[in-house]
Image 1 (cartoon, rainbow, N blue to C red):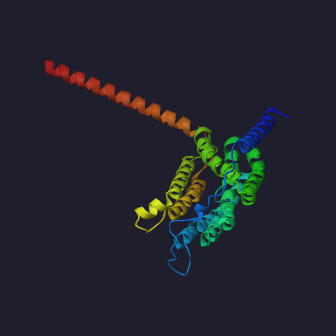
Image 2: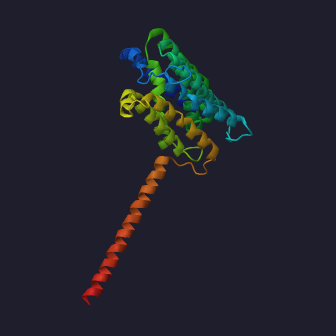
Length: 293
């Protein structure tokens, strides 16, 4: 076994070991039944219960279908490998499925229907992790990790459903939320327009804030719209920005991380300000000398 393959196996072994330790030392996290008590429970038209929380999932369908079509239509996204093609296709398929799963859940919110809300989201999360491994770490390793990651995500849903323990699902959901922005900043990209990852992460973070502030937002807007409805709309912006990134990006000729680019820009700004300050000092000295004469 060569050195690179050994490192990959060690990385996977460490990740599994950390997960096992967390499962041993942390208590189970049951699903809070208050989670299903959303602020906006109005039936506004067509007899659809929880109307706005249901129909606000429609954008996921259109964005997901558009992304899925463009993955395969005349090589529009210019995906460079089968691993990328499968990963992005699975991501947009998951986004499309969110429209159906989340709508089904919000028609009758309970633990049984919540499974179908979380399952497609898990497919999208795990596909994104595989994509990042392909783009930032190793193409072959990323392609091979797609199936195990998606299966692990599905098992986390089954584990919660049978044992009422959210810990594996929390790992699947929140590890990508932390790892992806960090990797987008620190690791040199294969493609241009890498900053779109940060825009997507920002909208997802905003969506989580709106989800947590569901009832306060409903009060602040005088019962016009709830935080959970806005959460759906903001979360749908994540695949929008990623689709725009795919449409615009090209192969990065010089693989430089965003962090390194920011450092260079900061140094350039500092040097520019320093030069401007010296120019002002020289001009002031010249004016002062002329006045003395």
